[in-house]
Length: 128
Length: 228
Image (cartoon, rainbow over the protein chains, first blue to last red):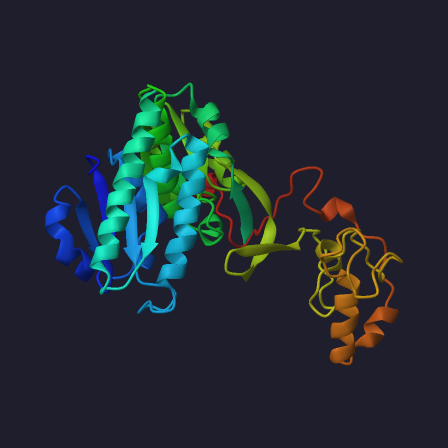
């Protein structure tokens, strides 16, 4: 796994799913949030400013968000952060948003593995 | 409210490039509501500029502060020590705020926003222009719909001949013709007689164009010499 990856995990989906696979991702910095829609734009950018290699937000499937519109807002905000990242020359692949349910730890494992690889690739491209 | 938009980050970076330590100063009123220069936008911009500076191998330092209003001296005063300790202030206020901060500080003050217009929140994330500050309001005659700002030609005595059958403006087929809106609302409210009142040519010397305007209320004014 890439050195510094921060994961904002929704306590209704990401957190319980991650509990099952925690041992495989010991270096992931987990930030539990009540909803993916709670993660604000400056918060995400701050992670990169503080040296994160990648940031991933994991929320509930759209339509099953307990805050109703949280996943929808998360999607909008991530799109906005990606546009800022593009503007300032950061590889957008270093930020990801995924939706899953608390019963999908295997899928979360695949997502985190793929994201880690994608971040590593982005960092290598940057070094070139 | 005054509606503004943030300048492109690259342009902002070029503007502040000569300065090492910059205070990013947000404004908590209009530009917070239109999500252009409030606390969140200040934090976002500070991080973006810090990342950019780091990526380019420069050592920019970006402080953040958001005050209630940048168009009133009493709100700016407490921030002056921080502002004057920096090489420059990047103001995320409308043009009026930028100028007042610039009047009060000893360091350069640069704008981070482009001020667009006086408007309203049409829906979340959408702001529209509703007032041009013409200085001679006629909304009582036009059922609360401004012919100056809502008609592309600012006509004051009915529509031009260019509106579409569907009530759209010839200047922008997506936009409603201001005068069709006025007519429909006057009709709805039984006030069509208002259309018979011919408006005289507007006195544009009262409008927010030309020489700078001033409003003085003698009952509120306290001349400094009288306080002493």
